[in-house]
Picture (cartoon, rainbow, N blue to C red):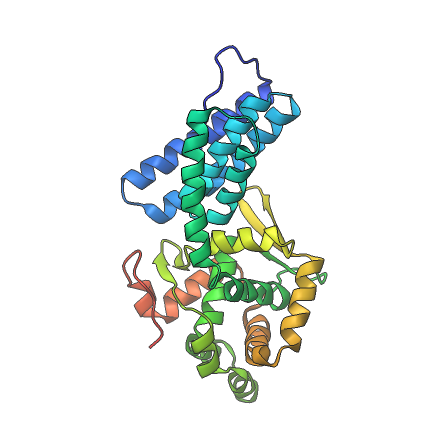
Length: 302
């Protein structure tokens, strides 16, 4: 949907940004058409971020009409990426501006579709969000005390062990050499509680266990000011913000989360210094059912 007037004079910076996001959208569509849906969603999310950058540049340059069109394009990319709440927010922002009636009708329909999906997700997002907050607090890869997780791969593989406590027990048996310490770690794990509460709908992805709802959860957390997400070269960096620390403190004081806090603490102590690539390889080496699963297959804990 990102079409600009032929007579519009744009800066070199804007033109480069438009070219970059156009290539991403083309790539995402190609992936989608060949059935590579998870990869397509990831590229659509990247395209959405680029398009939001384009929109900001257009608005700053005073091109309001084209800013609104770019906003709609960004929202459409988020929708295709599965991040419905972010898409809905941008559609609403575009509707608040002056857009053509033809485009307005299309945007209203798209926004309503996003709202329906968002309402379906609302019941699941908070618990998923709590999981990410606990991971950031207890599994940070920063030695200076900042609650940061670097890389989607690292976050997803840590999340895998948080959701699959029996697999974490198996991992502890393989990693911890001291029998007393190994037994201490295993005693902390509330297997039945965590199995019931932490939704385990992870699937086999190219890089191991994955949840296609991640982008919805990240959008939810950032919209609430609980975390921030930045990018260092090609790697995403997730940081717990002050509001996030307060949210974790509330979880720690909630007796219903006692077991999950212990689980996250144990995970951090056992795998806190593992890189994402190391965690991925560890899972492949020790869990044959996951390594041999077909792409897109749901992963169950036996």
